[in-house]
Structures are given as structure tokens and as C-alpha cells.
Length: 259
Image 1 (tube, rainbow, N blue to C red):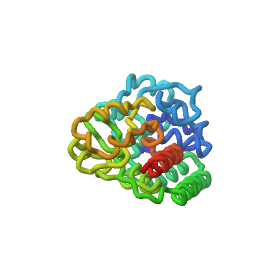
Image 2: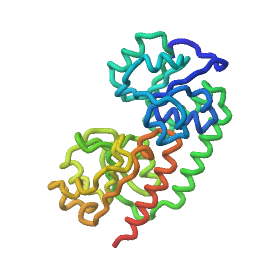
Image 3: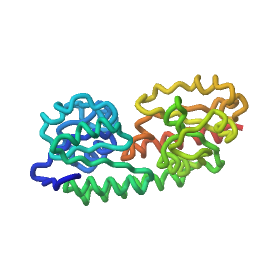
Image 4: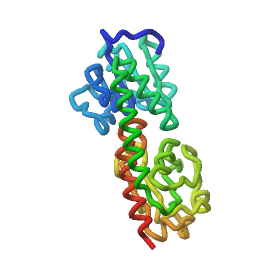
């Protein structure tokens, strides 16, 4: 942020679904005056004005009309988008979590900004308990997992997703958050492939994976273990990750039961 923000006049435009989900979860929804169209997938914000995001902003005037005291975005963002925003006297905060620990820090930071520090700490504790419960029931059979955030170019899911995969009893077989090739995936020989394509909801297409020539001998392909997880459940660094972890656990449990 480029200037101090008083909570007495706090009005937040959130261009990051993760921030929106966190603010709503800690009881700070009343400070939101505008959100992106994606935020409704992860938080109860149907009545708020819907704006662009850090990649496709649309009109800056729409944001200015809401008179925000703080605009929250997230990485990655388009440089031109940020430049447009910073041409105006706005306080702008960009989050860039990589790990579950980073996400906890973001929860605490947003909680402090909104005067909900205690509620933020409770949310962190609740998420930790949920993850610990999942870890206690994770699969005994160690599964090799390739989790994908985008198919073209092929990009593996972010580091926090790799941590969640491990919590559920799997191991990410390729470095998280990086471009990877068909050949790399083939050599890694995952037992399970998870598709959580960004901004697609649950519309990722498993048949595309079964049609990749280089993957015909990959165990996940031979055994029909390509699964779709709604993208917001693995790609939103905030409370939705708990639901994503539960879905991964169910997928891994079923896969581990296969001979």
C-alpha cells in the first residue's frame, strides 16, 4: 500500500478472489465495495458490483466510482493493468503467496487491515485443524501425482497445491508452478493426473490427456486416473483450499484402492 488506510473509512475493491474469500471468512465483507466476477465462486458476494481483475481490468473508472480506500490484487497481474491503476491516487496491495505458510501470513495481514486480527487467527487455526484431519486419513499407498493448472502451455499447479497433494498422501512428480512438457510428464510416470485449469471451474477436459501421444504408457492414462478438480478449490490461496484438499483425498483414496 502506498498510504495508510483508516478502518473508519475502509472501502475495499478486491481484484483477487483469494483476498475476497479471506475477508468474508474473517467477517470483513462489509468493507468490500467491489469484486471480480470470479469472487462469487469462492465467497458470498452476489450483491456487490463486479469488476475486471488484475489480468483483464476493463475500465479503471468503474473502480474510481466506488471510491475505494484500498484496492487488493494478486500476482500474476498484467503490467499494463497495474500501470493504469497506479496512475490514480489509489492504495494498492498485491499479494503473492507461494506456500501454505504464505497464505496464513496473508490471512493475518488482511485480518489486521480490516480490524479482524483475532478472527484471522481463528481462521488460520481452523484451516490447520482441517488439514491435520485430512493428513490423518490420507492414503497409505504413496501415489505419484501430476497436478496441472493450465494445459497450453502446460503448467503444473502452484507450490501450495503440491503441499496439499502431500497432505493427502501423494507426491508431486514435477516441480510446482512451472512450465512442463509432455515428455517430462511421461518420464515422471504419475499414477494420478489432476486437472485444475485456472478460470475454467470444472470444465477441464480429461479426454485431452488421454489423447496425448507421449502419455500412452503413463500409469494414470492406462488406469483411467485423470480427474478434474474445480479450479477455484486448488488455485485460490485461501479458505477454499480446504474443500480442494478434501476432494483430492477422495480421489487418492479411490485411486489407491485400484489394483
